[in-house]
Length: 165
Image (cartoon, rainbow, N blue to C red; front, side, top):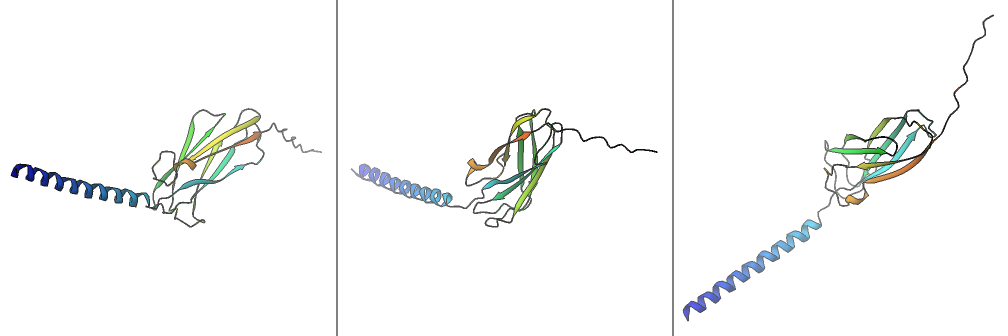
């Protein structure tokens, strides 16, 4: 009988330890869910020139912002990727900037300027901030910005000739 009583005590003690362990795990998970994190977005994209011509070099100036509840430490590399419908491959660049939480004036910027469309028509592009997921964010689903623009055929500028008398 003593053996049965001892066995019941061991099981009771193990159950209590398991209950305490599960409670601590639950509390740590709940607290972990409340830890503030940064949230990177593409804030704006400016295309220059605003009405690009065929074979003209176009520059895309991309501004990113942190709308999250935590800052991104200075020196953190944030990869921004540019992909266009009419060019093969993608181009990526890094921003190293301290994007503080709640400071809407804190932005990072990058430019892509070796894009030259060979034909007139509508082009689409996609820009992804934190492309390599180096920054843990509160929302990983808002890192992509897509847009489109038109390429037109421009008339060549008339040659200027000087008249020599």
